[in-house]
Length: 375
Ligand code: SAH
Image (cartoon, rainbow, N blue to C red):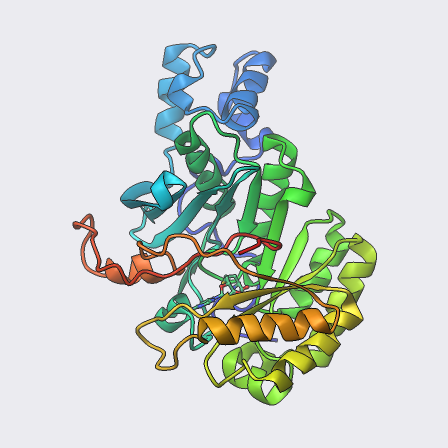
């Protein structure tokens, strides 16, 4: 059994004392003690379906709200907030109660609004091109810390409904399976976001994909492939050494069959590394076999990785090569070019005490929405 920090999904003690969005309905009922049963209903509806700040759930008596606010503090304190794309993109750096920091991004599109949430503070997967991977693993997030990212984005979205959630921020969701799944259920059951509008992105933790298959809620699955042969993938995505491509693709196929959802593969295009036609052809073989959708992401530069992203021409040539082979492919919309939008970057800039003025030269990099985004 693995003993790597952050790669196992063994139940762990809650990282901090329970926060506002941690307790399930039953636990919240216990907290309400002798209150009449309808109070629980009002609280649950207010917190989740309506997504209101506790203070604004005014059907509850003020002293009850005050008492709940003391017992269940919020988990996230805003340490930095940035806007880009004329206000269509907002990115937060949150300070957690124990001082750890994570990021969340809200992206508005004409037809939907998507929140990208973090599932871990840091990440143990050590993908060399990823800013979060470069910084290493800090700790797992709890259910409440994940769910609150969505709720807080909803507050900020004003009149716009947050329709989609992608588990594509900091961390590896399937290396924190229990909390990720707890958050998925809460968002689905209590907030009312349909499985079609929830997407988990994974580096390819095979036992996690298998658990997801058994869990029986057909959420979207995006797999960060980046290489279509084991030699290159071992290098780019080190967890491939433990779960090589044949095993990964087997698990993908099973997920596809059982969930009846189209898979998507993410592919960050890196100059001279995985952007050759032979890479495209291998990828086409894999994606074609699984009828998967491919999302190409021009690599975002990060301080700890020397190689640059593919040129615009190369990205388009790669896309055309895949399309000619019959693969459904999109170049991912890049949001937040003028902010530190690559996951992990805002946090990296705030490694020193917070809050600090958070301004950075306009070398920021794109963030990603879920699958299927046209450029
Ligand atoms: N751990 C999960 C989810 C977080 S990363 C996963 O690996 O899928 C979200 C996506 O951003 C992944 O596809 C990841 O490979 C990609 N990514 C990370 N760093 C990047 C960078 N510098 N440029 C482009 N994509 C990057």
